[in-house]
Length: 224
Image (cartoon, rainbow, N blue to C red; front, side):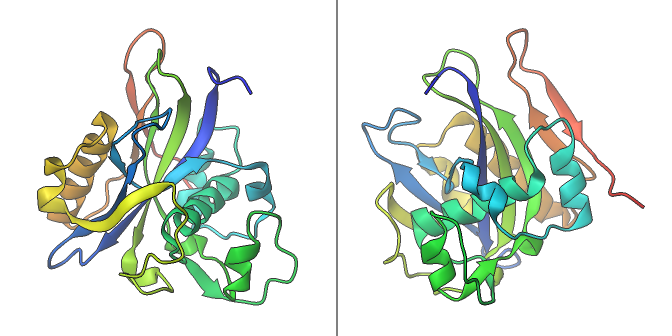
C-alpha cells in the first residue's frame, strides 16, 4: 500500500447533552501508532471498499454536500463513520432492521439487529492531512446526537482496542487534553454552532494542498 497517497476517511463526533452540559466521545490513540500517536481523537478511520455496499440513507442536504468535490460515494463515507464508531467504541448508530447478508466487516453490527442510520448524521467538517505526514487522509467529519445511539452511552465493553481511555469529554475541558490541531479547530466550530443554536450554511474544507492551507466552504444543494 502506498502510504503517501491521500486516502478517504470518515470521523464521527458524537455529542451528548448539547443543551445542558455538552460532551463529545473521544479516545486516545496508542503511543506507537503511526498516525497521531498518543493524541485524543474522535472515532474514525479509512473508508473500506465494503462500505460502499452498505445500505445507508442520508438526508438530501448531507448527500449533496458530501458529493461536492469528491469522487467517493456519500453513502460509503457515512457508512465508514458508523462502522468506525462501532469498531472503536462498541456503540450502535443504527435502526432496528433484519440484515441477512452484511458484507465482511459489518457482520457484528448486523448481528446486533440493526442497519446503519445515516439520517442521524450531519456532515460537519472536512480536512486533508498536511503534506509531509507519514499518512495522509481526506477526512470527512460527521456530527451525531448521542440520543440516536442504540446502546448504553457509558458501556464501552464491545469496543476493539484501537482507542484507549474512551470517555465523554466535556466540551469546556477538551482543550486540557492532548489534541491534534485539526481536532481543536473542529471543536471550536462545534462550540460556535452550539452557542448560536443554528447550523452553518456550509461545511468548512481545509484543503492543505502543496501550495497553501486553503480553506473553502462546501454548500452543495440537494436536487429539486
